[in-house]
Length: 432
Image (tube, rainbow, N blue to C red; front, side):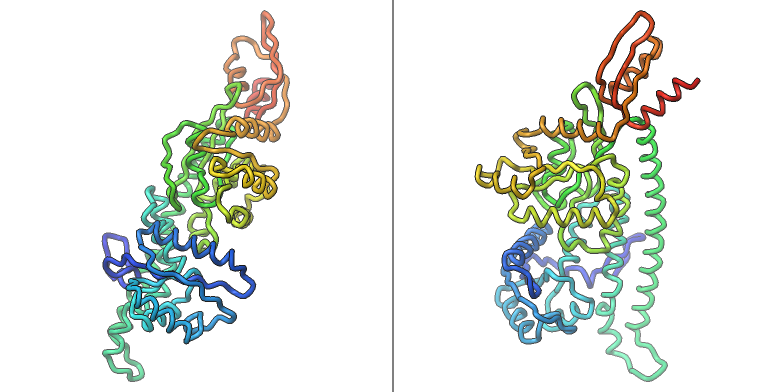
């Protein structure tokens, strides 16, 4: 373990040297279907390849009863260790979460690095974080994940000293120092995140002062959320066909028919078995969905696990309290499907809007759906404005849906559906 500035690097726990070859182990539990188990293993492979590791072998190791030593039985553990050695793997990656002691036992058994899905996702997030908030969130999640795994970093020093009652080995002393240092850094990062959260709250309040409705784009990782945001708004957000391509939320302005504007925010992608530390660490980012007027749930229609991905997304939204908002379901990447596959996905998601962010198919239909969804949260007003207050007329056009508009020599009479903030501004005009 070493320090760089205020950051703490977990050298012993993270990968040692140029480890590029991974052996993957899927661990389906009793009752898991073979299809689901294979899909999770394929997803684990995509995660490791996203991190730059080459998969040199993989297997499914069903478990009937979890053991405290290796999670699997001892015999199966020895078989996996032998196969990983045969293919020259540098690291073994488990799809299930390993406890710190199980991870240490595996590393002693196979004499190579061992990690799990949580560790891989944390490393990917660490590589993809760009803003200060994302860096802090990832650092917090990594420290909380690695803190109970520190013991192995100094155990070799403890074994070199005597074990008389009342004495402490050099390793134990260093372990306590490092644990205290990390705990202090965790407290510091949490305070810094509160400050960043306050800044985000200020920005959110500034947006709320503008009578422009807001929507959040949510969905499974690599479902095409950023690509859809770019296609709808013409923005320059990063688009890449890989897991967790973007972690930082991006907000862009979308102009609908009639000049009405909507602010759309892209959010971090969800994934099955998302580490709880990341759900907590990224809560401030995901809370953007709490303040949105509606959600756009993007599903990769070409993925065989689309239904499971949708369930995962709803579970995370429910956990953060956003699952009850008006939601538009978007079946993206429809251009990759055959006609028969389109019919099947239409049965699975009868309310879904079929689109292709790449070809533009279905985007007009989606814009109409956004307009209707926004209008459903509006209030109907009828106001007569003097020509000197055409700024308010323009505001109604920009933020609401104008039903009728009549001009006279002295005023303009507008019947429209508008958001609450616009209604308040009109009421202020009516009550000098």
